[in-house]
Image: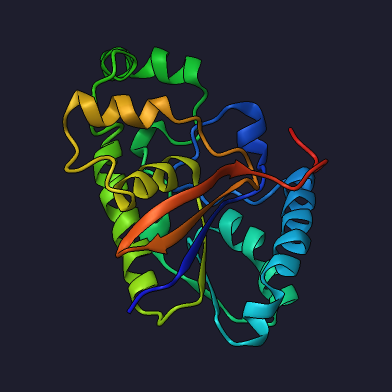
Length: 221
């Protein structure tokens, strides 16, 4: 059993996004623009998913961090479904880097920063590596999808974790740790705030239909 469709929605903008701060596991709320982005995305997606919702075939699961929950809340309200949360869908744990600007990370953690900029997939700030984050997020997405018998799973999560988790679901990257996985990851543009990807299940595999989609004319940062 598995969901037939998967929508991966990144949270709306936060003040930390606007300032360029490393958020990670910090529990940062949406800013006014982020709330507007979430509302616009919810209205659009609720219309797209209306028939599935009426048939009881939609689940919405978000990261337990508040920026993801605040993005999911207008969508579940519009669809008339419950919101489920899962910490497996959190962003990468940045440890002591969290809350810092890039210039501050470079100043306070020069050796780690230099290795990071060189493309090494290291555990940053005592948190986790990108690869560890991808495995965690992909595991959560797969677990929730496989708990469904058809229908649509909407996952509301974060940019780095969701992009890597999606690439693992698609079979494009395997076990992390090599330069090839990071190269593939970096060849795909990041999710914009309140942008989403759409995957479909075909012949026992996930197929990417659309990536980094937003509502036409939606407010951008």
